[in-house]
Length: 575
Image 1: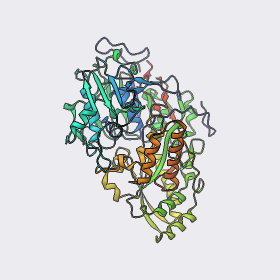
Image 2: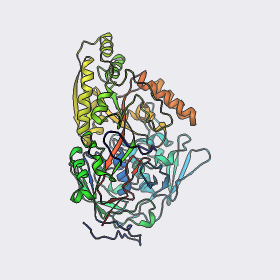
Image 3: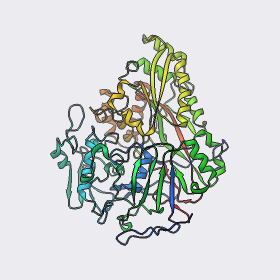
Image 4: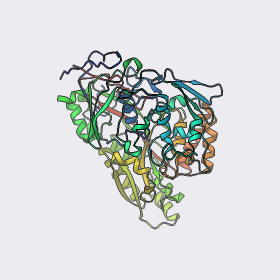
């Protein structure tokens, strides 16, 4: 869905008319004798957004933009990916709140980290090992802390129930607390994690804010969704208002001497999510007034692409680390049928998606869930070419005993571009004998809606997007299609369509035990099964990100290893 850790190069100049091409006070001083902000820092950075934030609770965040921004602004993690010098460079794993990137035992089943001295919460209290332990424990409360990644459940040596759920259900109910306390231990500032199986990449998983600290006395359960409590360089000034945004100001308890990642350039960051993508790009390209101090995390809509050349020197075009795909719902009365899912795949006109999103220079059709940036990318052939085959799809529906038209409801995350995309996809599906009802769901409600158990009977298929959490298909296939780790009484997790196949799960276990080229081959084979045998997902496109920033913004670099967006770690605003 969401977050990404894929290294991808900067795209070359594209042939669609894209030429690739208020001074304020504040020294950036912090408590504890921390270093001043860099030269040229200060003033206000504006973040213009046409996509509403769904979560800021660190354990619930699982959208790339919010993982990146949350980590750089107010949620420090034990490890993170370092900023890079230029867009598209590969980023190195680095220590953040920990003194190093961890020590692993010879058998790969125990990881140990030491938390730095001097890291404080915004009220001046020290961030402790117990705060990290408590924050991670919240992941297990899948009925309360919904939407976030479940790597802690997968990695840690805590027994599972017969349905694959953890015998520990989080800090609110407390069942199985002793099991968690055995798997995660604190000894002073040292935190130790015991793995269920050898896990050489656990320290990369820790870069996600879901592994961040959370102070128990500040926990309001699901009411903590926007109640930001900072241990980073910025804190929320006032409240966060959904569909409007909020303002971040300096956290005077942040000590630069404890932080090798963030320079905290701007004095203030104003996040405005009340805009449309078309409007914010008109403003960024015009580059007037406060918009000279602005960036966005939204990809340029098709209406802006022809004018990006007017922002020469202020634009960035990089390969997106995400795959956009469709998920048939196996609980749907239509798509519980194998032939109906296959018919939907055959009728999917990816060329309509490509056209609506800006053309084949920025969008490429795909039938692989794994992104091309990963070595396990299988490049699975399209089932019926770019345009699909509605006639063949209709024959399949009739063979399955359906009377056409077959009514289906398809949900997508509403924005300017996807409105156009799904209008085009609907044409192909309807030509195949479906009668498609499109439901655009606001961004701040979207993935929460998909993960709600109530949605299992409301929608027949969903749009989604996903990028690897770090450079391995082990963060793609299991995260999206392993029913044992995803589906629970609290909903489907990231397995939005309730795909539950014992044989496929055995394949996941087999692939997880492999390394190198053998693992790549196994993950690629599972991808091909998911897309061409079970039709558990219908991959749609890979895209390139096109971003524009204001002329006063310095250090606007797209970190393709750490989520694929502008990295706030070193960004500043010119005086």
